[in-house]
Image (cartoon, rainbow, N blue to C red; front, side):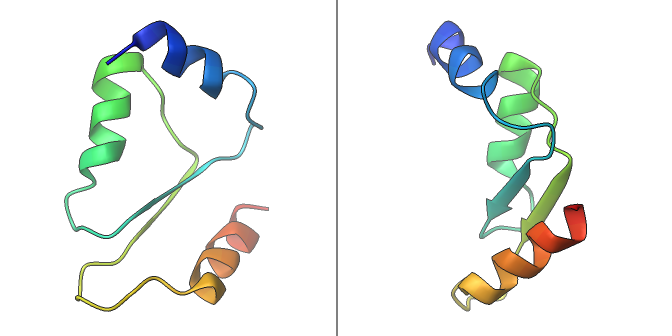
Length: 65
């Protein structure tokens, strides 16, 4: 992982962030925390085998506001 490139990309996002993952363990979120120290303000995880729908993401984003 190129930590500098990831940090550069993440520094330009807003103060509210949502990690969207289709797994129970949150592997991507854990990787970001451990490797670059990034901690999101929200998370949306779905692990029941169904697809993630845009409405679910929009709802999760609205809860962050």
